[in-house]
Amino acid sequence: MDDLLAARLQMAFSLGFHIIFACIGMVMPFFMMVSHLIWLKTKKAVYLDVTKAWSRGVAIFFATGAVSGTVLSFELGLLWPKFMEHAGPIFGMPFSLEGTAFFIEAIALGFYLYGWNRLKPWFHWATGVVVGISGIASGILVIAANAWMNSPAGFDYVNGQYLNIDPMAAMFNDAWFSQALHMSIAAFVSTGFAVAGVHSLMILKGKNVLFHQKAFKIAAIFATIAACLQPISGDISAKDVAQRQPAKLAAMEAHFHTESNAPLIIGGIPDTASKTVNYAIRIPGLLSFMAHGDVDAEVIGLDRIPKDEQPPIAVTHYAFQVMVGLGMLMVGLAILYFIALWKKKNWLQQKWLLKLFVFSTPLGFIALEAGWTVTEVGRQPWIIHGVMRTADALTPMPGIRYSFYLFTLVYLSLFVIVTFLLYRQITMVGTLYDSETKPKH
Image 1: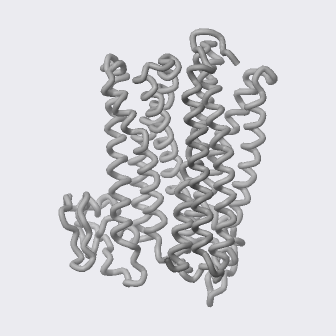
Image 2: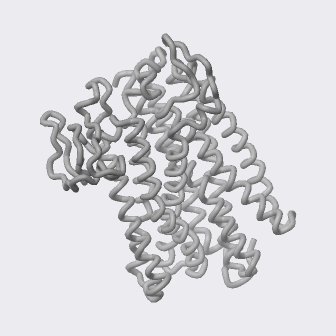
Image 3: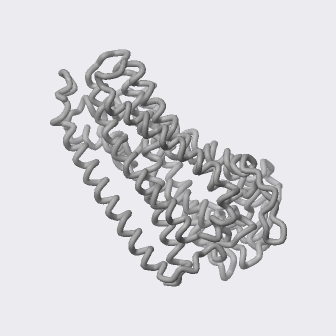
């Protein structure tokens, strides 16, 4: 394993773990606040039970997200010092603001967790709202920094020098809105389906059914609405990528040849030697329409991209297909759930619908990881698109592979610890809570 591969694998592994913790930390406070709000209005003890159970989950993921995020900040300096040397003064503002949002979230979470029976009810609820808003703000600010890597702005690059730096222009670059929108909705989709899937499994097992039914409905509504909005944000993102990163779009679609009336490719196995995609379904003109709003528009193919500037085609294409395919499966489940809510209420009691949600538990996170792979791998070979190559940003420090092994061990340990804590939390629900009487704690 060479140093560049080890460094890239370490960042990929670290980001792959952190993105799950971060998304859950962004979304779970909103589930918690909805349940808390319903309890304040109805005084039904089951919603207080759900709120307190979810608050423990929020605390777990806040702690693990803080650890994994701190590790990532060290990795940026450890693995990519040349990148941070030049990029730090330009896109440091969103990271600084993210730190501020993180501290606000930590303070508000402290008030919330220890505010039961100590704070006025509505003020207590408001502290939880601050937790949710701060978490979303943190995510958007980090995405703004990543968007800058895809759409560098806020400086002039002259003879290898970064001049006339404008941090505000860097933070609000051309890609930040589409990426922030797509990522925020993805967080609600992935977390919503995961939480709904866990509660649907407990309903099927007949454990504390009323508690899990109420929790399931809140999570399922968030998840299904977000799933239906995601294709819209995906279309916005795709049009943005087509304008700014044609090489990424070409790799996503395995679009080898520049052409008008370009077909949308569904599935298929790219053959880079023959520059074809085998076993694919092709819909004529749809790629042109989706990228440019015109079925006859020209879509740039990989033949227009220099060989040394082409992303890894197979990885990018397969990841994109996985993301879109799983996204459409979740849209289909969302439609079924809406039909059940509005027209076929008897479906809500059917095991087959609950089993579909159980099946969908990991789908959102798999799609999330696939989408993040498209974003990062599709930008290669650039760490700053069109400005700095990833290989040129690597630290000259020897022994990076050992750093990869160490950090991988850290994240695997976090995974085991979080899994154990969540399993204990879920299995203890039946003993800690009795949703038809007053809370036992």
